[in-house]
Image 1: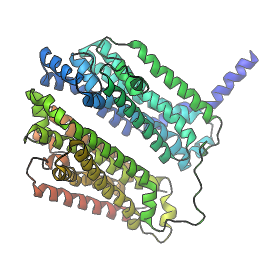
Image 2 (image 1 turned 90 degrees about the horizontal axis):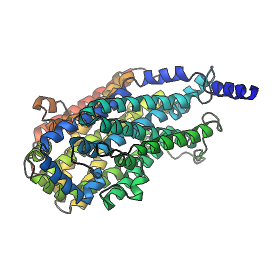
Image 3 (image 1 turned 90 degrees about the vertical axis):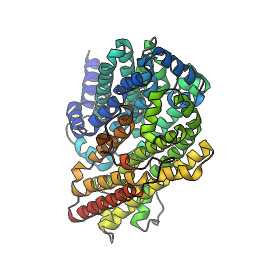
Image 4 (image 1 turned 45 degrees about the horizontal axis):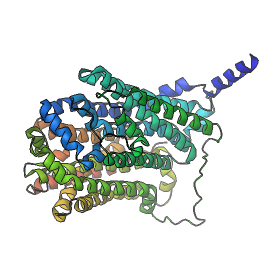
Amino acid sequence: MTTLTTHTTARSRHLAGTGTLLRFALRRDRVTTPVWVAANALMVLSMPGTLRDLYGSTAERVRLVGQLEANASFRALIGPVFDTSVGALTAWRVGVYAALLAAAMSLLIVVRHTRDEEESGRHELVASGMVGRRAPLTAALLAAAVADAALALLVTAGLAGQGAGGALAFGLGLGGVGMVFATMAAIVVQLTESARLARGLTAAVLGAAFVLRAAGDSAGDDGSSPLTWLSPLGWLENLRSFADERWWVLALFAAAAAAQGVVAYALAGRRDIGMSFLPTRPGPAAGRLGTAGALAWRLQRGGVLGWSAGFFLAGVVYGGLTDGAARLVRDNDGARRVFERMGGGNGLTDAFLASMTGMLGLIAALYAVASVLRLHGEETSGRAEPVLACAVGRLRWAAGHLTIAFGGSVLIMLLAGLGFAVGYGREVVPILGACLVQLPAVWVIGGAALLLYGAAPRLAPAAWGLAVAALLIGWVGPALDAPRIVLDLSPFGHLPKLPGGTMDWPPVLTLTALAAALTAAGLAALRRRDLAG
């Protein structure tokens, strides 16, 4: 009895302060987490109405499913479909991407409240109080669990009209994917010494999960490939929401999350604060970074290379789907109108290419925000202060990161265009032009992020809300036949629809000038204010 009491007391001591840290984490994420959850839920819940408008009759849905079963490229991109109901088509159409968003949200929450806190030195300050050794990790996982539970609840309630059982399965599946990647991130943060490397490794694992699922689904139309079962994203589709649900698949999510959680807790108890099991390799004795721009490149090169590879591969995939997508929607008036609203009405092939290049432009805005806000991260972590204490002015320091942000967006869109050319096999110059014409809108979002950071650094994370809002307007707006006034709220709504459309220079030049003005205003505000202490 005494031994049991001792063990219980030890466990309680290790978790002391968890509740306080959880409340603190939820307060810090009171803007970002609701944005992630709301954006993901809105994407899912907008789909049934869209599908009902596009494929209102059973015959149309049966014909669609038949076409999809014969198209390995679409299965690789989205996954197999298991039933002709609106609910099943919803789970098919948004399942993979909703799961990717849930996974990204969860792993970012865990990294932010564990390794980020250690790297900044705040964790050591907190640990000096009445806080248990495993309390920060527990609070981070609970914060991710709260976000995943909120997403699961919204999706389940919103899709209940399509079938209560299917809605519950789909909601729990999305939450399960999020928790699997949250606990995976909990392991990675024990292995790595920097938050940047932790995010990179977790993103690589997430990308590998997508590739495994895509490879498995391209080989068969029933999700039974061993490669599909190796990926948590494949578990979600094999849950078969709204199509004779396999409830036992939920046990895979629970088992994986529990096993990874045990490993993470074991590792957390065996290392010192700030240390890792894979320590960073020491640099050369003599420094090789002579300029602020070189330092910015060293800090952001991993992200630039990762985004570049991702955009090139996305271009190859979408380019290879072009002809098949045009055939798929040719016989459906509703689907054809959606593509024409997204990409212009100059032929289905050009409309598809324009809509896909526009979609990559919307995603490139996320890259621009992440790269610009690296300035905010350097400042709040205290790493900017030693740099600025030398003969480096604020504008010169910021210019290095802005070059990576704005120049990197040019690079990734250029590589996306080359990927389209490789996958599609023709019309290289028009497709490159369609990708590059997205840049002024991307720069507007990046300039707005810089202005927020320069003028009100506490509001800098709100730049993510601007990028996500533009993404939702560009992605969901055309499908919902949103009025022109709503679509025009996004800078992307003013761009010419290329290829196939007419190059309209005034809006392109206006957006470029607006981006320059926002950037100049942000730099002026940064120059005048005090740095975070």
